Length: 250
Image (cartoon, rainbow, N blue to C red):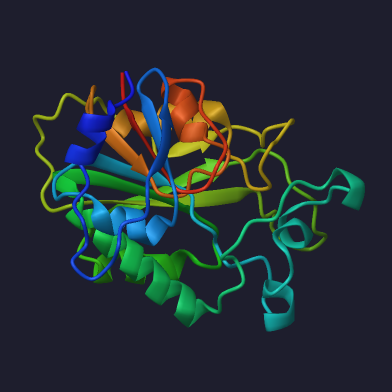
């Protein structure tokens, strides 16, 4: 069930140097969305609230040159005609140093909001994976490996390997007990891109269903970059919007 107003406020603490804006939130069967600035929201959570962070932040990728990286997200990640293009999203035009610093900031705040042993899973592409690995470790997480999402199809490139995979780095907030009630999970997932998207970089729902099984049953999952709400749809209907989404795994 979604958190009540009282339960929600018990997870939030006022920041001593910042005025906390009024929270907009809604919930469903096992999920709650907080709408607002992600950095402010993560920083406001009490320590030890979450069992996992599973999220898909802006990659700030999509090109090797500054002129290519500064294009809109639709130009970089979609081949849809202009009249059918999905909404662009913010925060994807940073250079690598700025993006790494930004990731280190929200990853550090997210770790403080997590329980000891909590799991982190962050999606990324091949270009920015090294920078993300730096940010994950700078923020104090123990980097444990890289997952592969095989998208099965991609545009052919003559004389080159296909770019048909994306990745997710996973880590933990300190040691992970072997006694956790979690089975042996795969490291490679084969699912095609969603056919009917509502977000430019939407992930397949079956992929998210598999990924969340790294969390203990009943664990509370934080998704600071809700996007199309795929993480929430694993547990409930989901909702599109910016801000933080959190849910409990069945």
